[in-house]
Image 1 (cartoon, rainbow, N blue to C red):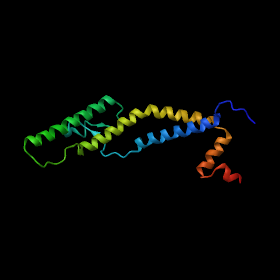
Image 2: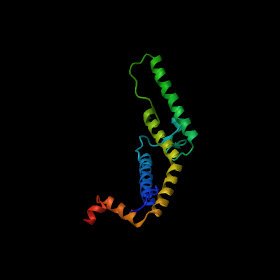
Image 3: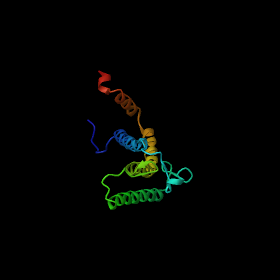
Image 4: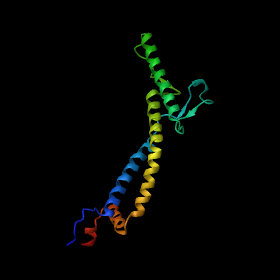
Length: 157
């Protein structure tokens, strides 16, 4: 009979922690794989769209992305207010550079989430590599069997 020391087996902790890290990596990967609704090319001046545009899909400046979104929010509100002042009951949907406000909001939101998750993703990848290196041969076998939908009991008996 073995004495219970209250210490959890290290291999159990490695597998559990590795599984949690991989789940977080999957969740962050969903953000980067989200489809965009705009071309990503934004310009404060639509008449100079081709020469003076910012690609929000590569922009890493959060302050600038917030400025773009603030600009679009103000323009959309001004458009709606102008239609109301003109007693218009039906107007085309507000668009900027050919895309709706909601499309810009979606894409800028994705870019902000990607920027915010970049450091976290790097830390998770590093942790995944370190934890994978700590796995025992039994842990690796257990993972393989789990991936095949089997358990050690089904392979032993």
